[in-house]
Image (cartoon, rainbow, N blue to C red; front, side):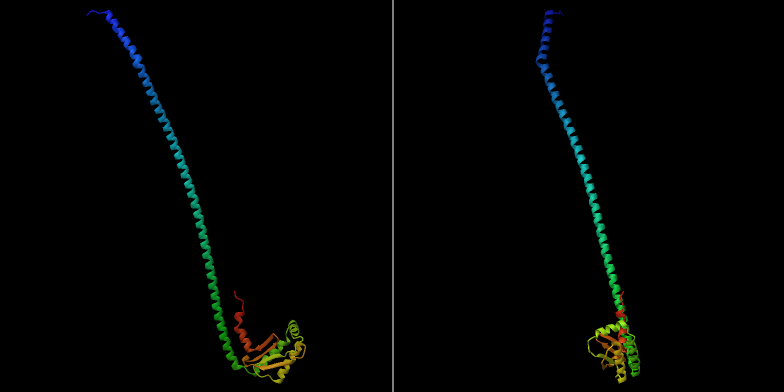
Length: 251
């Protein structure tokens, strides 16, 4: 085969022209398109990376907020539990104090009722004893016993303290009232004179006795000078014996 240099040169020229045309109208636009495509892909990658970073920041912020919220919830729960415990302790203490007051009050009432029951029993016993003694003394009462009680009464009048004598004299100063004298049995004239004489010595002035008989005295006498009363009789003594417990101070 014979080489035709002209044809060969023309083929080379055609090839070069083709290369120029390809480079001019195909390769450069293709490179430009590829470059734009790569730039677009890089932009998308950058956007995706930025979105990922934003999402990670949002996630971190959410986790931080969630942790802060959990910590706040735990602190609020702890405060609430503390307040509930203090309120429960306060109410338990208040209930305990109330129960203790009720117990003490019930104990005081029980003791008071017990003392009152004992006092009533003792009072009944004293009254029964007084009635029994009154029955016995009525059987043994008589002028002789009353005479001895009269002596006892006159002796008591003579031994009155000076201060009490002065009080009686001041009480009856300027008054002309008679002195009431009660006796269980009729008094003889000498006995009445002795009483008036003793009262005159006691009060420092003439005294007129108003004598009466009262069998309820059982035996003995009772003298009333204004508001002042002096008795030496079995009835008053038995009544005082029966009222002894009432006069005693309560605990």
